[in-house]
Image (cartoon, rainbow, N blue to C red; front, side, top):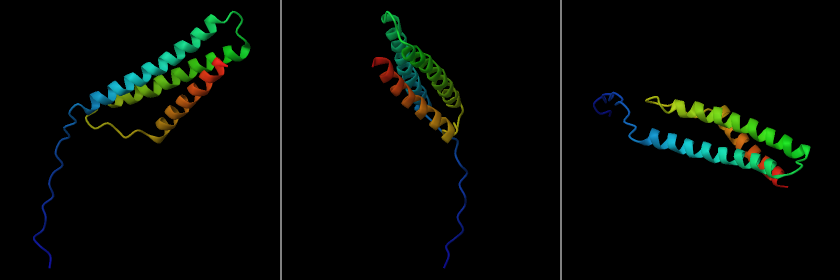
Length: 112
């Protein structure tokens, strides 16, 4: 026996509170740490008297990875301004993971 029909409650407006702001701040911290890695890579080249071609290519790749990471992070931070930000796409997540791994490998290459 079925009970009385349920009335559908309208979806209330989302009250995100401070969550979007915290997420934007987390993205800012992440981009700051990525920038520090890029600056330290550049510093490593400046300190060497005769940097080899491998180091110069690695630093150039660090800068390209840094630009790609900043672009992807900027897109995500702008999305946080919406009242209902979209879910992080798989493509953006893959780009961010690839950039992070590339920075780690290139940073190790520069140090060696």
